[in-house]
Length: 250
Ligand SMILES: [Zn+2]
Image: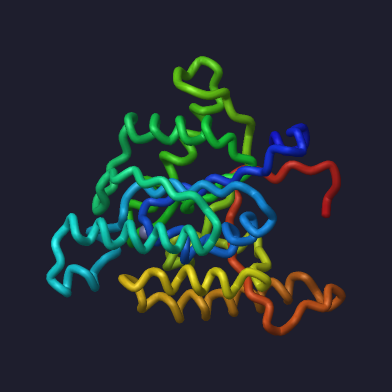
């Protein structure tokens, strides 16, 4: 981790790697808004627009591929602006998103340019959507390559930013355990406003509101009564593929 030694003038940096343009909103919008609200830098790397796999409404309306990509790009840019993050699109093509050395190398460049203190991406499993595990694999591989002094490219090598895997749409079927519960209550209105930018996936607005309520109940249960958390606590859940580093068990 670099933030402990970084000059005070350098804000902490978060990198979010997603398969599709909407993923960062549903799964990590609270974490993004929280970091941005603290004045931190958040970079969203969207490998595709989700134009084929996550834009069914637009296809049913008779729109064409390029029009749908533009529509999803516009939605994601507006959602990112609401959350306070910078978004970069790779336009790698979804359904399927193909894992390539070239795309991974482009991600290495983003790691080295942004020098993340924290990385968010999909978990390793998702039997309903192969693009998500592909993005996970490339996000982790790029992190490893970006750490290697001998790997060529612009920018300095990175440290070992902790990785948090956000919640998939079918958590039980994807082997997802809520190992980390993040309290997003204070930025909930921001996350909801970002969700409402994604008109192409309007059917998910209430689903992800309900999920935040459920994870909030679990957060309060695990926090215990002494913290005095409100019944209206809302949360996002994450998994950690690497060990937490600490000098104190807390
Ligand atoms: Zn997705």
